[in-house]
Length: 170
Image 1 (cartoon, one colour):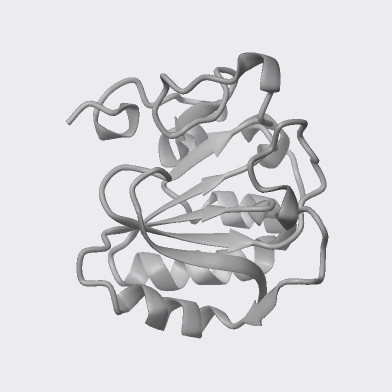
Image 2 (cartoon, helix red, strand yellow):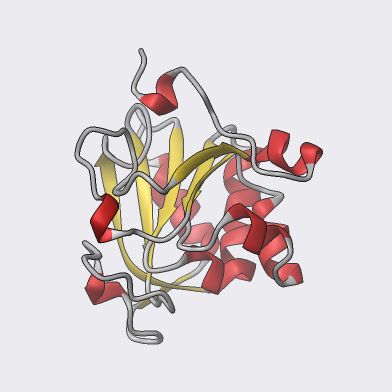
């Protein structure tokens, strides 16, 4: 069961193409300038089970990818791992934002590592107001990276996506 802040059915700002974005409730980072400070408090969202979220995703025939946002999805790693597995079995690309870096998650809890192992793309790092940019795709600040998670896990270090649709090249 996940604690959600909401679901956006037709997002074009949380990854390439038409995606569904699942916003979790609760975040330990509290980044100054965060565009979702209402998601910071834990335990006050809408409880929803992972199977129900999958059903909602499947109602959108244009959706090819799902992005986890927040809040901090890795603070609810067990539930988001279950959801990611359900989505992957149905052929969806799964991406996640995180205020943690890949390196922190790679060495993090077992649950965080399990979620990392189920997603395709990670946009990592905290939002840094001094590095805010409206000129970069799918990130709020220049310190954030868009990572190919399977390649990063295989290499044991962060591997950035360097071209293509995740960087706004179509």
